[in-house]
Image 1 (cartoon, rainbow, N blue to C red):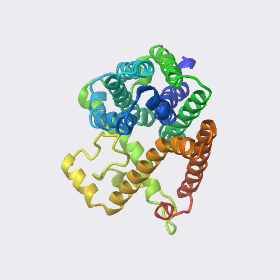
Image 2: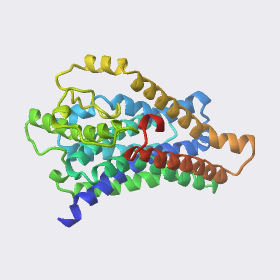
Image 3: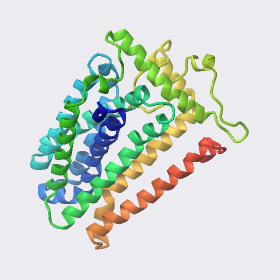
Length: 339
C-alpha cells in the first residue's frame, strides 16, 4: 500500500515519534518555574524531576536491544508509545510528586526504545543514498527539533497565562494520534528483521548494525591526505568495536565478550576523550536549559517569551553551525580537526 510506504513510515515513526518524545524535555525546561510555584517544589526536587526521563533512558539502554530480538517490533513499539502517551497525560494533570517522578521515568524508559529501534529500521529499509540522511534525521535532528518545539510552545503558553499542563496535553494528544496511525501499519513494515527464529533475528540485527558501522567507519577513515574510499569486504568482517552510542546496545563484535569490548573502548584514548567531551557538553546544555528562563526572568526581569525565543535562537544557530561545519568530513576535511 502506498500509504504505508517506507518513506511515510520513516517520517511518522522514525522522525515524528522521537521528535514528540524529545518535545517533553524542552517543555519541562520551559515550565519548570511554573511547576515549582504550583507544587511548592524544593530546588533539589525540581531538579530531580527534570532528570528522571534521562535516568529512565539510561536504565533502559541495556535491555531494548535484547527485547527487540524476542518481541515483534510493532507490538513493542505500540506498547511503548501507549505507555509514553499515558504517562505524559498523567504528568499533565497530577500534582503528586511521587506520581510525577514515576511518569517522568516511564517517559524516558519508553523513549529509549525508540532510539534503539529507529537506526535498525533505517538500516534495513533505507537504500545507500538515503541511509546517512535518514540516520541523521531520526537521531540528533529529531531530538533537536522536538526539544525546541516543546520549549517554544510551553514557554509561550505559560507566558500567556495558560496552565503548565497545556503543552503536555498537546504532546499526549499527538502521541496518541501517532499510535492510532501505527496500529494501521502492517507489522512487517515496522519489522527490523524478516526472520522468525531468535538466532536468525540476532544475526539480521547485527547485519543492520554492520551496515550503519560501515558508513560510520568510512567517514572516520577520511583525512586530509587520503580521499574517501570504501573498505574492502575483508576489512569489514574483522572483529571491531561497533560505532554508535550507548543507546544502541546490540553487540556486533560477536566473537568478543562485553568485558573485552569495554576494555577495548577504555584503551582507546580518542574515544574516552570524545565521550567525556560529549558528556560535558550535554551537562552544560541540560543545565542551561533549566536555569536560563529563571535566570533571565527573575534576575534580569526579562519577559518569559523573549527569554525562551532568545535561548532557541542561540542553541539553533549554534547547532546549525556545528552541523554545517561537521558535514565537511564527507569532503576533504580531517574529522579530528573538525572535532
